[in-house]
Amino acid sequence: MTDVAARRPTRASVTPDVPALDSASSALPEDLRAAVAELLLTLADDEFVQGFLDSEWTGIAPMLEEDVAFSSLAQDEIGHARAFYALRSALTGEDPDELAFGRQAEEYRHCRLLDHPRTDWAFSVARRYLYDTADHVRLGALAQASWAPLGQLVAKVRREETYHLMHLDAWLRRLAQGGHEPRRRLEAALEQLWADALSPFASPAAEATLLEHGILAAPMAALAERHWEQLHAVMAPLGIAMPSTPPDPSVGRSRDAVAAGFAWLWGEFTSVRGSEPGATW
Amino acid sequence: MIELSAPQGARLEGPAKLATRTTPLRSVVLAALAEVSDPEIPGVSIVELGLVHRVDVGPGRIRVELLPTFVGCPALDVMRDAVGERLAEICPGADAEVRFTFDVPWTSDRITPEGREGLRERGFAPPVGDASAGALPVLPIAQCPYCGSRRAALENAFGPTPCRAIYYCADCRQPFEQFKSI
Image 1 (spheres, each protein chain N blue to C red):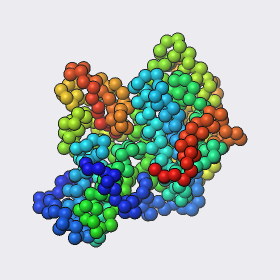
Image 2: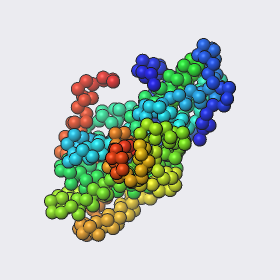
Image 3: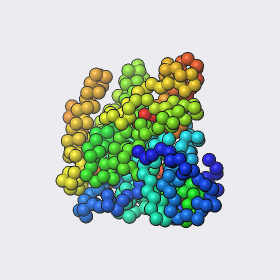
Image 4: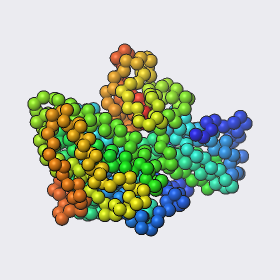
């Protein structure tokens, strides 16, 4: 291939971003538009924040393979976030970059599970396992969404997440069965995280609208219940104790105060953009 | 799936002649797309990888829809630009639109037999399993592209690009990459 940069065409002839929407397929009833836009923001923010948490391991993971793996996971998640932000932008007219990098820390709508700082490797594995398994259940309830652009994107994302699930399942078992220190660290991490384990299922404000129009296949509370049962099925054979009563998934995505862990991460991922506002590259 | 090769007689007859056109033959567009390589796997074309979803040629316009292998593939912009440039070369007067779509998920089953051979020749094991069947076959198996051995161990499901995994061949002792089943 010859030098691409030297033969760059005028951008005006090329659609500037993915995914593009056909006007016909993007038609949504007015009341549903806002509900879907809100849902997309939560999906995008979750993937975006998880992706940046993953990228924190680039260069310092406990082994080279995990350096590569977590960098690749980060790339996947931020790619998913980009697509969800772009889909929301198609509905609201917002700038996807502005959504991703231009908001104040308190305006992000990621779940509370992702508020915790990176901490140690066992903590990152435990949190990512809880997030991936919850996300899998949630995406399963969106894969048949009546709005084709969302259902199609989710179908594609789910295929990629299969690899994430496989990887984190292997790591959970490795730490659980890895002897004294890994086991102790894993249990300590889970102990901190159980309270937020169902937070990815915080009900969107317009959940009834999403259910009524066939965007979401089941209420978030039902998905949370299913997820908790599946966690039991994995943890019990490993001898890992779970709280006797599941945490309340209805705890929302807005916060009175920005969590310290996220405040730090937000400062990191907005720092380059903040260093030269308005710059393009 | 689009047709994979241009019919006989549809070869380019030279840019000078084509430059006067505003509406190219569909077969010319397909032949041009077959010359665009995946930027991360030089030598294997986007047609062989099954990335071309739809080609629509109308009066004075060309519309090409591509399927991303991975949602976050960083090569998407490069591919879109490369296709746009190639279209501008074969038909400078046409209004060319290149876009990515998720209308159907790209799966590794879309890679053509020629594409699989092209991957192997360049040291990439082609994907295994039937990715279009219900559950995704995440199987830690691959055939070594160098010696053909099936005694290869998965070293890392995550490689240098989102679409590639790293294996090690127990027979020829060569690390290699596999294009993932997805």
